Length: 116
Image: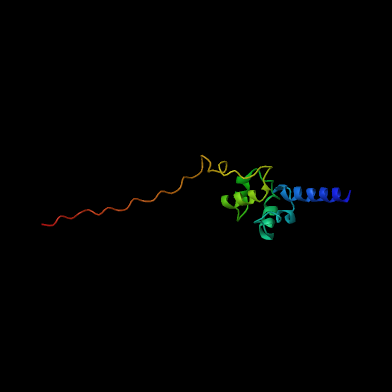
């Protein structure tokens, strides 16, 4: 009986540690249980969602300073979800209407001066 109770309690704790942490609902203390989120970042997440819940990962990346695509991928691997979904790098690709990266200027070509 005791052995069964201990096994059940261990299973419950194990499931809680693997459960996802939702960025739109978790309090700051729960956000800090995700590897890579400390007090400062958890406070920024909570502050940003007071205006409106995050629609998706792109929304979180745009609204929370310190969270870029690389950090978003690591946080997702650590158990953070946004609107119930993990981070998908392919879905976070730049939108069709976004600015294209600046191209480098072609080097100047010097004209050869013919000498007589």
